[in-house]
Image (cartoon, rainbow, N blue to C red; front, side):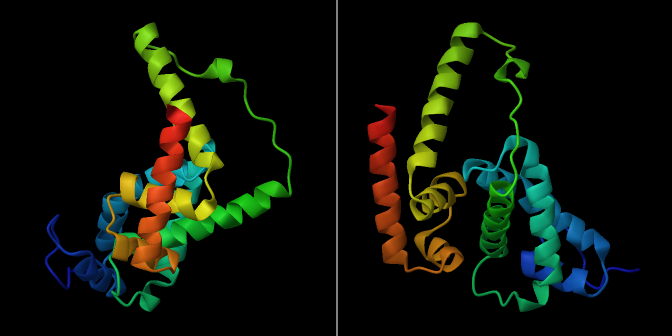
Length: 183
């Protein structure tokens, strides 16, 4: 099918959504290409098990494309997508709570590279990951959306159904608590 709109890497998300709704599968692929990695980083930072991140990203896009007609452009597409991703992760957590899973032994992790640098990086990563898990859910999500995804407070507020002022407060508290944990 011919492209109803010329698509390129500079096409806006809104143009890609319109093209996809007109039957252009390449537009959907472009949207996935743009947003899959940031979505995966958000989900991993929000507590998704590494082995499940790809499945959660896929589920997020499935839900987004099924309901894209409800996207009104009141926020950026990525913000809307991250909101859906957060809901997918919550659903995953509820399902996981109902089943028991045995984690793989940490000995199977790849440990290539300088051992000293690897140890320092691993320690910092573990402290931050542990700190993130200690934060209340809303503080953790605000921190990840701001620090990891670079969203503005009004976008965070739209994604999490709160106010920009509340998002600022949650971010401030999250940063303070994480500094206490890391130091």
